[in-house]
Length: 199
Image 1 (spheres, rainbow, N blue to C red):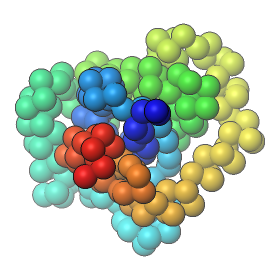
Image 2 (cartoon, helix red, strand yellow):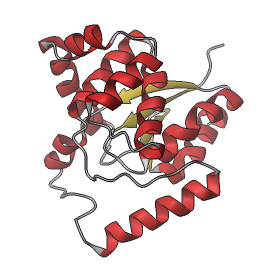
Image 3 (cartoon, rainbow, N blue to C red):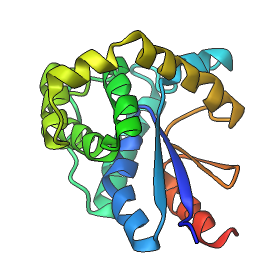
């Protein structure tokens, strides 16, 4: 009998994705769930749906987001340090993560990339973050960056856009379980429960 699976759709510039990445591995191990990592680039998905930037600069919504992240990190007992830059350019990190998903080291890479960004101020989108996270995952940065920048991998990432749209995805983090979509870090536990119980 195979273990239940959760597709975890992540955009590495997504703020709330940090809270998910920091705890999903432990939850999955405890509940006996397989994580199917699906890195994707959110801007073209939102463009296809005529949706604007989710957190406009200097808006009340963005101010709320930062305070909410701080509260939720404290609630979950997670380390938290607000990054000095937002948003970040996540494209190369996503290309690397997608390669990692195919090669089997996406989770280790992702957890470290987010940890560095959200606890040490070593920003996603920088070579410092990327190379450190790759070494943590046991990978050679030079090999991986070259492979991630290949036409084949770039096309694979472009193909994630119609796959995300077909699942009804409009934001990150999102979870797809048994064909059902769960959106947002606050639905992570619901997605895991649904994977295990089907209800």
